Length: 97
Image (cartoon, rainbow, N blue to C red; front, side, top):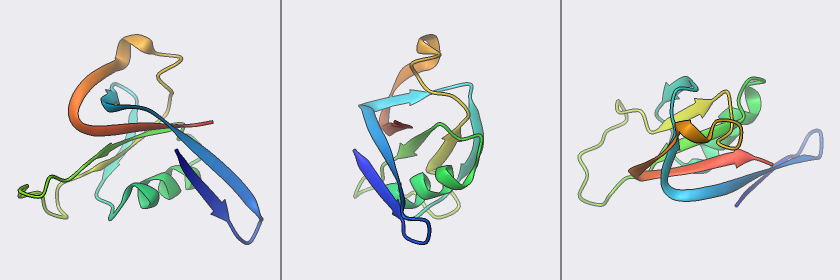
């Protein structure tokens, strides 16, 4: 679970991890590179249409660069679209609670 605190407004947001090696497909609204899952989650909070994220983890032996997107913002949650919730190795899926 990721918990984000927004200091100026003292609000909090909770992201729950649905499952490791799963993603939500067909609902991506932005695809970008971020330095961490926390940064990806913060970008989701700033987008009023974002309800969940797919984050690609980087293996130690990976040749992934900053040009390769690893953060996907989704306009839906797996709960509303279970047929679009699919296994994909190397990803983590989080959704707003």
